[in-house]
Image 1 (cartoon, one colour):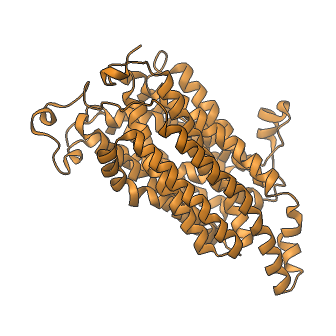
Image 2 (spheres, rainbow, N blue to C red):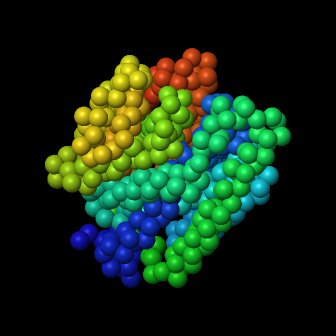
Image 3 (cartoon, helix red, strand yellow):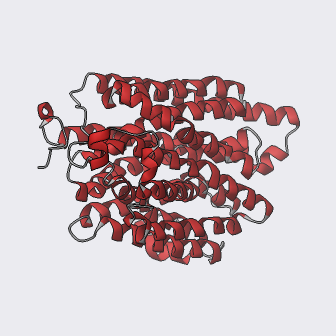
Amino acid sequence: MHTTTLPSPARQGVLLPMLFIGLMFFILGFVTWLNGSLIPFLKIVCELNNFQALWVAFAFYIAYTVMALPSAALLARIGYKKGMTAALGVMAVGALVFIPAARSGQYAIFLVALFTLASGMTLMQTAINPYIVCIGARESAAMRISIMGLFNKGAGIVVPLVFSALILSGMERFSEPALAALDAAGREALRNELSQRLVLPYTVMAAGLLVFMALIHFSSLREPDLDEDDAPSDASSTGVKPWGVFQHPQVVLGAIALFGYVGVEVIAGDTIGLYGRELGVAHYGVLTSYTMGFMVLGYLLGVALIPKWMSQRTALILSGAGGIAFVLGVALSSPTASGVSQVLLGWAGVPAVPDTVFFLALLGLSNALVWPAIWPLALEGLGKYTAAGSALLIMGIAGGALIPMLYGHLADVTSPQLGYWVMLPWYGLILLYALFGSRLRKW
């Protein structure tokens, strides 16, 4: 097995590092995909419209832009293993901030808690993505990231189910008609009661993160050597130049493609519950699991097909084209008929959903291989600029902050279904990057 990208004391193969990194991806998925259930929950607790509710996504994902470069600088000083440990500590602090937020019911404190959680996750992402790319053969990097995606999106399936069971039980008391029938004091008391349900889960989450922090700290995880195999000639002799990463169009354009990808991924995963609630879907709190289920299917296909049967670039081409097709399905299909989900999932006993919601969930299938394919294509040939390139790609996650806000505005001024047209050009951009942008090496 190829391990030459690790320093000589760490020629232990890739299994142990992949187990630890898989654990980190599961934690990231657990925290990230909690937002899909948290958004409609906070919409009730804090009396929000769609645009205001999507500030949850903004506060969470904007941290990736604000904290990416500081995270890269910190990793350069303390190393990747200590960076992962520090990231888990920051995330634990963010989880603890949810306790005063839940007790006060103040939306601003919830947003601070989310930003703090995501700041720790930014440091984690900046460390683990280049680590998993460089730990083995470059041509199989998308396969390894797909395996990591199974951990990440597997958590995304579990989280809405757990959140629904622990937090969303008895929600008929908090429906809009039920709240409207109460006076102002009664509504306030009921919302405070609902908010208190978050205290115990986030306390447990903070404790779990601290346990994982200790596990990583005392593990035998080794530092990767990011330069040994693919250091470019200009970097090998002159060192890393300020802003030198911008000389590489494949990573700059890759960051733009990731900006669009994360935006549409967040829309597909985090707004499906809001959309289902608008359409009267009874089990709207678990709809994120539908999207995550299709993402897991996509990752399984990536593990099975890449690189033996399909290249990373081909996977990205199919993802962009499939995204365009499914967006058309979301925007143009029926909000009342449910024939598509009955045919495809009825045999498994999965509750039917309107066709337009089902196509939104199917975007998970198109989204699954975008992240695994863009990372190795974008980091190819960066050598000593790999850490800077990783930070640049992480900054692209800001798309998850901005694009869903645009959807929320369009959903309020037009309709939730028409708002999904905002995703179409971003899938077109992903397709263009796969066809042309990822091949560029000079501007």
